[in-house]
Length: 177
Image (cartoon, rainbow, N blue to C red; front, top):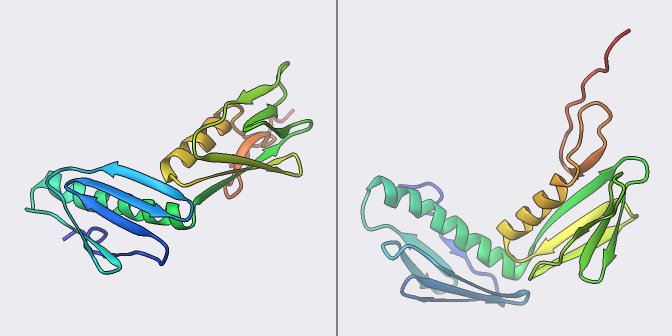
């Protein structure tokens, strides 16, 4: 058995889960998420728990078992608590500002870098150098944060660039004379 797949998902109060065939809908205080899963994976809602089962022990079914459970768990957590990524700007003159629903970054280029707004994603800026990306879909929050980081990835000599708050930059020593 899959160690992750066999764990039941506890549904918190205020969250409703409905499963119709292979389509799961999760509604909560932060919003609604809908996702279609593989038709062979069995999803059952029993009381305040979701149980994911597989029909056989084929390699593909074993892989989908844990993946389906993890995706459902992320949906439940997303509509109840939400997901958040924190990015820090390191460098002289590097700063961020919220422009409408989008984001405008000054990253040492001759022009400001604009980040377009994304559905169900909110941007917040603290102290001009800390960007908070929040949303209900874990994969979208991670992808938007990765796109922002890619505009100026941290370099190893001085550590300048856009980095995750919990990221550790391995520093290199400069050339010796």
